[in-house]
Image (cartoon, rainbow, N blue to C red; front, side):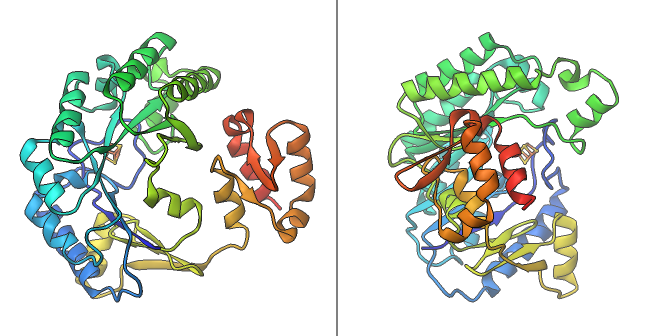
Length: 364
Ligand code: SF4
């Protein structure tokens, strides 16, 4: 069954580490974007009934609940099996949560990143640990029990002790899903530019080294496992049955359609990508041009790379095995891949070096 992704690339602030095509927009810009987005969804000819919906891209929780309802009313299949909205913890209010639940939202992904005040401030975010606890409580009161908390390993100034503090908060709040991303500093982010310039703003002088980040990540894997949150994808951990059904579609190559700026679609054969920035997206809408700027055939071995991200790994067909025989053999010998039950998967060490593994396969 297929999924729907809706992008709302506006945020209250631009986080210091963020390299997404998102930003702070003027009210008029946001309005115009929303009208273009509505038009794109309304014009879509549905070939299937969606099973999951995911609102992300920036901060879709900024949408007025009445506007969110107008948008979701255009998507067939309500009540969906899963409908997620990304939210900043300090933007969750009882009224909003109740309206979300009425509109069919079943899951909220909270952009927490850290529970440690000094680390949070350096990202540019405004919440506090107590505020996150309140948001979780509000959502549960509204009947939205499926909650994800995003964490980042490797924030400036982060240490083994401060990381422990964030993990303790996770244990206390007991969300069913946690995402842990290892910070990759991109030259396009404010933090990345500061680092390249040798400055110290945003904590640029205190970015942990790669080895420390790997240790923080490994500690999270162990601590989350103790809490019953199993790693099912490189960055994603869940209690059984709480995995993100929508995100699983990306890794299992099931079809999805994306609306809005920088949204991607995949119909089982080809991929389509919309204009990257909100400005370009709105501009195309004004000129009566389609939102998509690129369509390409899906690469034959995508299933291979995406499937390897999952803990369940991939079942190798003869073609894949032949094509990648040398690399598979080398990584099996190096202990980065393992094979059992006819499936190939990354080992714990392989997960840490996954970029290297994927690059090697891509080079074939
Ligand atoms: S990290 Fe998320 S909330 Fe922060 S600027 Fe980027 S898209 Fe917006």
